[in-house]
Image 1 (cartoon, helix red, strand yellow):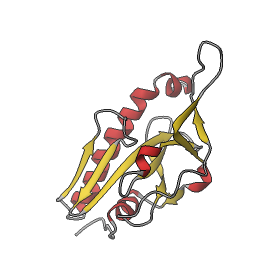
Image 2 (cartoon, one colour):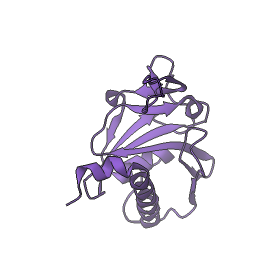
Image 3 (spheres, one colour):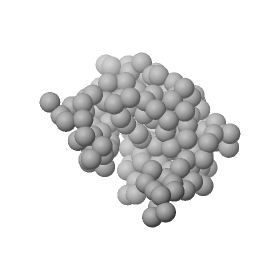
Image 4 (tube, one colour):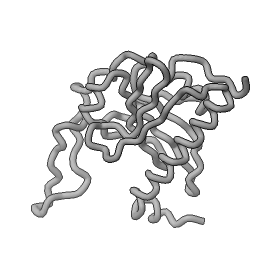
Length: 170
């Protein structure tokens, strides 16, 4: 059994594990559907609001990937809204890092931008400065959990991202 504090004390490691699992699982689903011309690219650092880029033909999706034990508000960079087809995906995980549920925030079809972020609250820094205050992160907005749409499965999520139905076997 994993200690609960392991999730918060090792959150960067956990995010990397989930990202690798997601990429592998997504490529496997695409492989089994006979789709071998899709690419998933990883950003070296999260400076432009996305972690992954999924592309197939003319479709390019910039994806902010988040994960946790339960869906809650998610901080999204304004830079993601400047990318065509930008979106955020939250992966609900178990204590032992099984991917259990998928949540989506973005346009329902590729080629369309994120919904406007201006009406959402500006994100506050998670750690306080030396004076104890948590300043705002001007380029980030908090997207409430209720703005995310639950997606039935990884196949459905990939179908939404690529704008086509993904079936398990060809």
